[in-house]
Structures are given as structure tokens and as C-alpha cells.
Length: 181
Image (tube, rainbow, N blue to C red; front, side):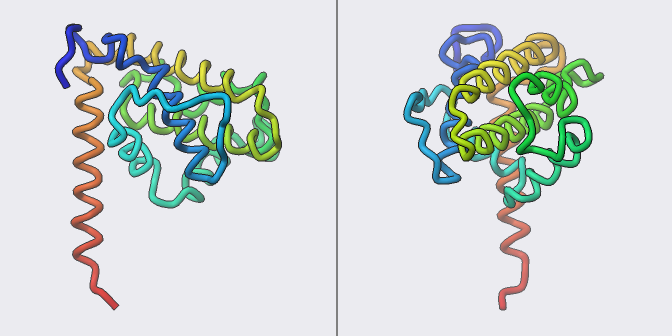
């Protein structure tokens, strides 16, 4: 992924805000929900979004359960009770970028998964006004973590794509080695 910037995550066309927007739009679509007010920007290759889905788990219920376990008790009964006013605290709980490794690829996927699941919950409750705010806050939170740590740790969008490809290849290999019924 060649860019005119020293670090690909600093290249304006690869802005985190566009990636988060695309992820949320496609995540809602994957659940059969269309977000009429926003369209795909296709900032980062679709394979990055597919890679994010792979990293969050092939089963949406597992991702939902993990997010609910992390938030339960703190934010009500779980995911459906998370209001926008609590969302920053949820982001800090799920994948705080102040940890030793900064914004790891795993932290980023956890944050995206959480934002996607919360947006789905809000959309199903017909609460569309909070979704753009959730997208914006998630993008700002991830961007802040990236700027703090990616240069020092050598992380990049290209590295994220390579990691997603590696995980997808490992999952394919594992699936193909299973005995067929």
C-alpha cells in the first residue's frame, strides 16, 4: 500500500474516520440494516473490513457475548443498555489505548466490534441520532491510539491487512483439515 506519507495511517485517504464509517455501514448491512444517511467511502480495502470480521470471530454471538461480559454490570444489563453518554467509558473499558502495547490490531478490532454491535442495537431501537456520534467517537478514540503507538511499534494499515490475511489463511487451513461428514 504505497502512500505519499511516511506512515500509511497518516495518509488522508486512509483516515481512520473513513475506515470506521465503512466498517459500521457494512456491519449494519450484514445484519440487514441499511443506514440511509451514510454511504460507503471505501477508504481502506474491503479486505481489511473482512479481516476485521474474521478477527472478531466468525460467530457474531461470540463477539456480542465478549462485549456484554466486559460491559455487564457497569452499563446496565449489557449491550442494549449502552447509551451514547456512556460510550466513551465503554471504549476505554474494551480497548483502552493507554495499555502498554498502545493500539494493537486486536484492540482496534475489539473497539470496532463493540461500536458495530452498539450501532446495531441502536438501529434496532430506531435510535439513528446516536449512530453518527458513535462512529465519530470510535474513530477519534482509535485514531488517538494509533497516533500514540503505531510509529513506535511499526504498525500500519498494510500490517493490519497482512495480519488479517494471515488469520484468514490459518482459518482456511484449519477448516480444510477438518474431516468432512
